[in-house]
Amino acid sequence: MRVAKAAVPLTSDVFLRRFVTELTASLEEVIGREEATGYIGLAGQRLGDALGDLYTRELDLARFDREQIAEVLVDLYRRIQGEVYIISADDDRIVLGNRSCPFGGQVRGNEAMCMLTSSVFGTMTARHLGYAKVDLSETIAARSPRCRIVIHLRPGPAADGAPGNEYYDRLDPPPPAADTADAPAPGPHRPC
Image (cartoon, rainbow, N blue to C red; front, side, top):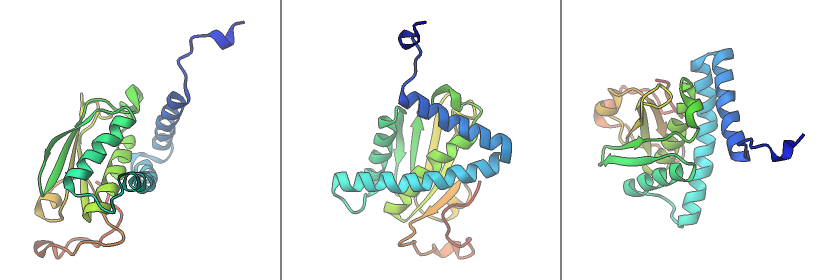
């Protein structure tokens, strides 16, 4: 047998991507999408903190502004073989598109995986800007040809009316806006 010379397209990167998608699919089957999404969200928040530390250390900046955080999010996905690009950015929100999921075709139908994007992007953005609400209105996992990621940067009516998960800077949460006095208490995220 020539096992060592077989053209099996397997690298550690391919193996780990496949493992993560299979783990998420298994969680969805066993405990349901909502619970699986919660577990993935917690792991994503920890990953977002760690990745945020890498970027702030390498760029020698304590905090990023809106333009910088948008650039960091695009760069992050580029490095893991995604194709995220900026659609628009203003004081209220950053809108990103993505043409290619870093987890490849296995992500289709595995929508809990999208919580990884939400929690990493939300955690990193909130850490630097104080607040983020991530709305994944279109996803490759839900069989769209691309992802559309809307990151609301301020609590208030626009963010309140959007689906998604909220993230706050755990060290310095922003004061509630005047018209959101009845908003829920800050927490790491609120399920869709």
